[in-house]
Image (cartoon, rainbow, N blue to C red; front, side, top):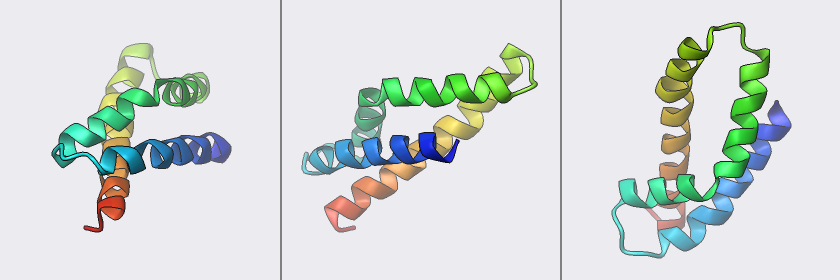
Length: 85
C-alpha cells in the first residue's frame, strides 16, 4: 500500500510542477493535476476496495469524503511549494 501511495504522490509532484507555473487559481490547478493522474488513482482505489470490508456504497462515500479530499489537499500543498507560497 505504501508503494502505491508513493507512486501516486510522485505522479502528483510531476504534474503539479508545470501546472504551478500557470496563472490558474489553486483550486483549478489542483483539479487539473488530479484529472491527469487517473490511472494511478484508480489503481490505488481498486487496491483499497479489495482490502476494504465495507459495502460498495459505503466505500464510495469513504473514498469521496476521505481520500479525494486528502488528495486534493496534498496536491494544493505541492502546487503551493512549486509556486513558492
